[in-house]
Amino acid sequence: MVASRSARERKAAGQAGPLARVRIEVGAREQFVYKITCVECTGKGERAWSTYRPGEDNGFMAAMDRWTFHLKERHPASDAPCLEFLPAAEQRLQERREQRAAGPQTT
Image: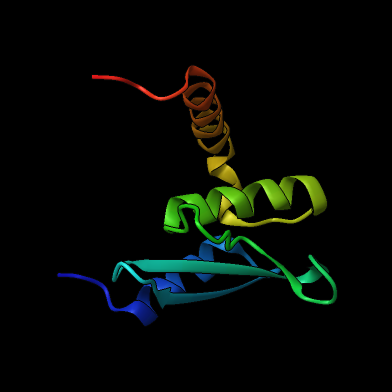
């Protein structure tokens, strides 16, 4: 059974913790786009800091990884369930960096 968008939103909000506001939208490719915003921080101008990055992966794992890094850097005393996955998020980040450094793959 596939979870509804609102059920996914509630689950993601629970994992992100009390500093997060979570919205899920449907992207141009008919995929879920996760937008997690911080209730305390601002990004550009007066807009709330957000995990959304135009043109990049904004699926659940990518958004939650960005959110976890934000919590670690800006709110180190915060307590959110997603922080238990910090080592895995750091590993994924390292793998992406290595892939970019290797350049385009030719097959």
